[in-house]
Image (cartoon, rainbow, N blue to C red; front, side):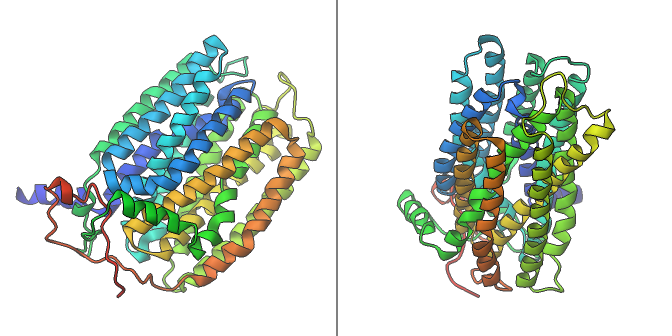
Length: 460
C-alpha cells in the first residue's frame, strides 16, 4: 500500500473522520431542514401547512426515534443514514407542489415520511457521535458534530438571505426549494462513505466496537427496558422540552416579526452562533481537571441562567408586539433601531439551543460506552424530543403566543429537578467501557459489524 496509502487508511478509519462524515450528512440534510423550518412556516406566509406537516413529522419521529436504535443495530449505519437522508429532499420538494397547488396533503405526507427517516438517521448519528470517541473527548466530538450540523443551517440562511434580498413577497420561490433538494440528495449519498464500525480504530489502537450479536427480539426487549430505566425516565422531561421551544422561536419571533430577507439573515446567526457556542461549551465538558459530575453541574447552571434570560427577554418582546407585526411593516435588519434587540434575542435563542442539546448528548454519553445502549438512548432522546415537538407544532395553531411562551418556560422549569438528578448520578468513568477486538472479521454478512452494534457486557 505504501506510506501514503497507510496514512490515508488511518485517517479514514479514525473516529473523528467518521464523525465528520456523519456531520457532513447532517450539514446538508437536517442542517438545511433547520434553515427552512427556521424561516417560520417553512418559508410560507401562512404557517398552517408547515405546522401540520411538522406535527405529522414529529408524530412518526416519536415511533421511529425510539425504534431507530434497534433498526440501526440490525441494519447498520451506512444504508440507514443514506436512505433516511433522502426523506429530507422529498420534504423540501413538497413545498414546490404546495406553491403551485395550495394543497398541503403532499407536504403533510412528506412530513410523516421525514419523521420516519429522521428518527433512524438521528439514532445512527447519536450512536456514532457519543460511542466512537473516548470518554475524555466526547464533548469535543459533540461540538464538532454540532458545528457541522449548524453550519448547514447557516448555509441555508445565507442562501435564503441572498436569494430573497430584493424579494417583496413573504413566501419562498420554487428555485430556493430546488437548491435545497439538490443539496439534501448529495448529503444523503454521503452516508455511503461511512466505514463499517468494526474497522474504526481510535488513536490508542482500540476498536470502537466488540463482537456482540443481536436480533429483532433482543432489540425489542432493549427498547422496552428504556421505559423502566431510571436514567432515561429522569431525562424524559428534558427530552420532551428540548425541541418544544422551536415552534415559538421560529413562528412567533422570527416568522411573526421579521420580513422574508431578515428571517434568512436571522437564520445565519441563529445557527452560526450555535457552532461557536458548542465549541466553547466543549472545553468545559471535556475539562479533565474537574470530575464529570462537576462539569455536568456547572453546565446545568449555565443552561439554567441562559434559558431564564431567553424566556424573560421573549416575554418583554411579546409585550412590545403582542399581536406580531403586519406583513409590509415587519422588521428589517437595516432598521437597526427597531430590529437590533429582537435579532440579538433570536441569536441568544440559538446559543441556548446549542448548549442545551450539547449537555443532553454529553449526559447520555456519560451514562455508558456501550454502542447498543447508546443507539437506543439516542433514539429514546430523539423520540421523546419529537413527542414534545409534535405537541408544540399543533399548539401553535390553537394556542395564543403568550400562552405558548408561558408553557415553554414552565416546561423548562419542570425538566430541571430530574435533569439535576441524572447529572448528580454520573460517575467519573462509565462501567461498561468498550474494549478492542482486533480479529473481528466482518466479511460474513451474519457477523458483520455493519449489521450489529458491538459491545461487551462486563465491567472493567
